[in-house]
Image: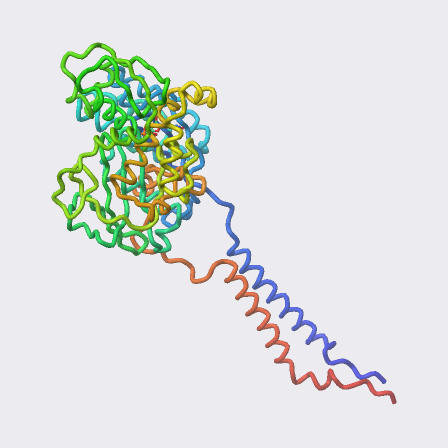
Length: 491
Ligand SMILES: Nc1nc2c(ncn2[C@@H]2O[C@H](COP(=O)(O)OP(=O)(O)OP(=O)(O)O)[C@@H](O)[C@H]2O)c(=O)[nH]1
Ligand SMILES: [Ca+2]
């Protein structure tokens, strides 16, 4: 007679099935409960009203991670047609109108149900700083027109204002380090070099700068539980367009009818108007007395001489600090890696010089060769490049090299620490992201509390514990084992 298998008693079977169901249910609930939910997003819009043009950026982040880390991304950018808002001083309404195409586009890009909660900021930089210093009522009118235009959109408009040079530098630094995930992880930070049309910023953390020497250059932050003493300086008039004006002003101080300019290509000839050239606070005090209406601007294409002319716009004669970059401005010792963006990138990218492992001497040689290229040949080689941009790359490249090596003091050793960048992980490098993160309190001073385990780790542990429970359960039925192992006896 066959002995009955005790595992096959109804009670054992029911207990086992319930046990297994309970464990499967436990694991399923744990997995489902912690499954990432379908994301809902929030949005923010920043208008960068630069001296040369305005750009609109839309940022997006998961709605439930407002105060959390590193998840804000740029999803869209729009370049406003026409010049920067400061160029509309004599027709302010047009400054407002110029923004409408990009703003309409933003309306399409941000989901309608989010419009009213989406903050909209406009920050203006060096162009408006210059206009404000020259004619504050004109700058007020431009802002008024721009504000009226922006208020017509369904977003939550938070105002239009001029950023200080310090803010511009510091927010550019925050952007770069946020996108690089350096802040959240408390890693060594990256310096930020921004070259605009009317001003240029340098920002970095240096061990030998605690803010006590030249406190005007210090910005202190506590971000994700770490303290930073940032050195930052913005040089008004040293963006590449105003630097070009100053360089031309150097060469036209006697009011000649013709200048031979080493920063432009051989064969380049252009008639320029004195009043237009000197119509900027960066050069207006140097306008020659009674010059002719125009002068002929002739290129000679000589990098070495161009560098000599460019050097003259930097004054390094006085310095009341332990060390200075130029114009008596303190600068601590350079430290760490640097990201160089805006015109640094546009220019070096065009010149095929973004690779900073190319030795500085070779960079100079290539630029020398480029500057010496006849203008007609260059135009034929680049038929699609805007002539104004094309004509200025020799000057701009020389200006960038001079600024980096002769003024900021980058050497052959630390030049490779610079990376010429346009964007990081799909977001443009610039001050706008840092500005928005700051105004929306999106970077906490202290490190946010995070679950001790990542999701995958949590699910694995729950599964292991469940399996362990199952094994324990089976072990708990041990008294029944001997019966189970008894062989059926043949009688
Ligand atoms: N070659 C080239 N130059 C560009 C491009 N976009 C802008 N520029 C020029 O590069 C310089 C710097 O541009 P931006 O960084 O936009 O300057 P901005 O923000 O208007 O000026 P700031 O207010 O001084 O910051 C200006 O002289 C622009 O005319 C581009 O796509 N290619
Ligand atoms: Ca800018």
